[in-house]
Length: 175
Image (cartoon, rainbow, N blue to C red; front, top):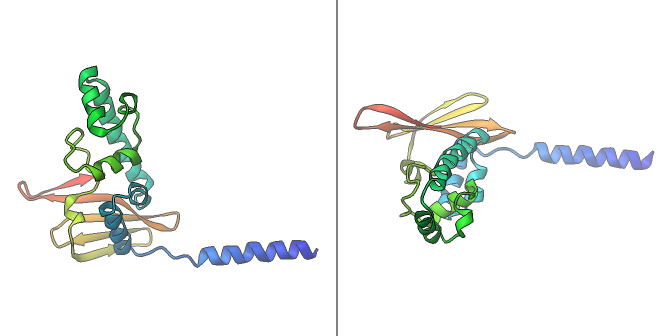
């Protein structure tokens, strides 16, 4: 009986300590994401993305890897050499590895349409406005860009970026 009581108290105290962990607000999540990007820490960077956002990035990467797979072997060897990976790995690289590579090699042009993170958000930005609800927060920047956060497992995660195409005046969405 005494052992059961100790176990119950331990489980309860663990639950209490876990429930006290509070998610940082979206602006802090953005700061941590930008910091991870500048520190070239792809694992930390990805940890601030929603599952849907990371999935969409993985789908984009899959398209790039399919394009790599269609290259002649001589061209693929060039890609492998540029990336510093074995030939077989060029078409099998995962999202974290690819993002890490892109962070470390800003001039890499193959798959350049794959946006790791909008350049506008990587610069010092000022938030003009915030739209908030229980499960969704939108940061609106002075430039008109919007970054949408959702609550996932109790933590704020980046879910969508809406930029502004100043040439056409329309919004571009990176989901």
